[in-house]
Image 1 (cartoon, rainbow, N blue to C red):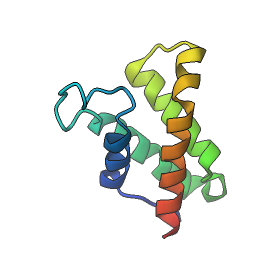
Image 2 (spheres, rainbow, N blue to C red):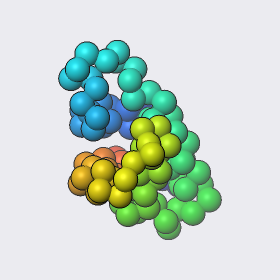
Image 3 (cartoon, rainbow, N blue to C red):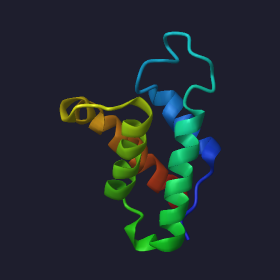
Image 4 (tube, rainbow, N blue to C red):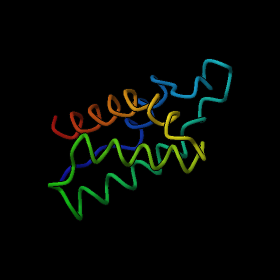
Length: 98
């Protein structure tokens, strides 16, 4: 069953600082809620649909979380963030395989 810690997901989000909030001086827990939501969703996928634990599916999860927490965002805004979403998703997938 694919699993990853919430702490590791938050570390990926903090490092990428997608919204540039940490760089602007936001508190260190800025992406905590997003990390919790992503962790919950990827854990559910890992339990319920382990074969669906792919970079594509995890990218979709991150997009959904971002839309909920920072949206509503236009398609262009989400598309601009897509490479970073995909990078984090790939890191999540790689982390559960190690």
